Amino acid sequence: MTCYATSNVEDAMTERIRQAAQRWRQVFHTNDNDLAALIQDDQIDVLIELSGHTADNCLPMLAARVAPVQMTYLGYPNSTGLASMDYRITDAIADPPGAADAWYTEKLLRIEGGFLAYSAPSFAREIPVAVLPARKAGLMTFGSFNNLAAGTQAG
Image (cartoon, rainbow, N blue to C red; front, side, top):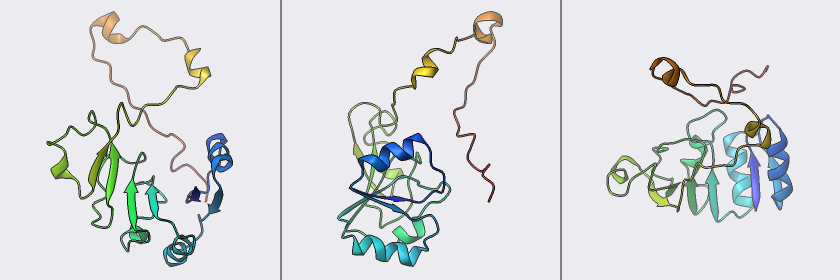
């Protein structure tokens, strides 16, 4: 497995993935033409991109089809809109069969279970949960999960 790191942020997960990779390429400062050449030189058969329309994505380069099979997964919950993106990995919960298929340029590959599920880190299990306002006062409670670090890097 070859990994192309398009972000300049490194954390414990980055290190975990780097250790699992057979080949690690830090390509944050690499332009699209050079990255496309590197991917082709590496003879990548199936390329799975994880950014979608988020920061540091490589969609313009992927529009030129740098690998025989191109897939999108995980980092963005919608279509890339690229005719050159062959598949999107999802599940039947996020994208119900039939109804959702017409909204994607990619063919949807549905995996069993939730494709966005993960195990919470151990410290998260230790955080006490407060009584929600909906339970105390009958108010609606909304939640939002975001990467608060995104966009805050000095550069």
